[in-house]
Length: 133
Image 1: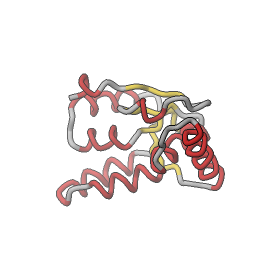
Image 2: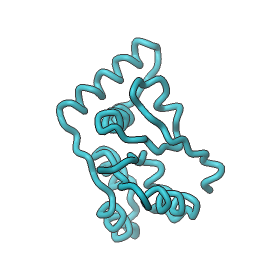
Image 3: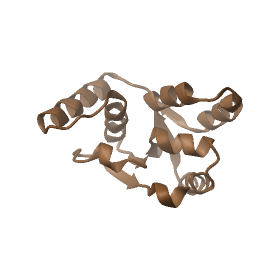
């Protein structure tokens, strides 16, 4: 099973050939399997440029896609509700990604740690976008 769950922004930067992101994912994947949530796969396809189709399919074939099941959906809904009670907004895609990471006990690799603050059970691998360009 995978040890890391990749957030959408990380996958997109890899596909766009940002050298440091490519290098980082190669290093993370050396001793671990890398995974994405099904909603990340959806977002990648939605943002894919026509000329990126082959490279996108090649990368996605190397990543484990974790499907949205009942438990993950329930956990995502609970995360959204908890953030609302605290006066914060959590979008559905981010809630599904966080719930997937928590449910599978994976470390979420993200450029946007602020989107995932104060979520019990969520382990983050925070990336600095300035250092990945």
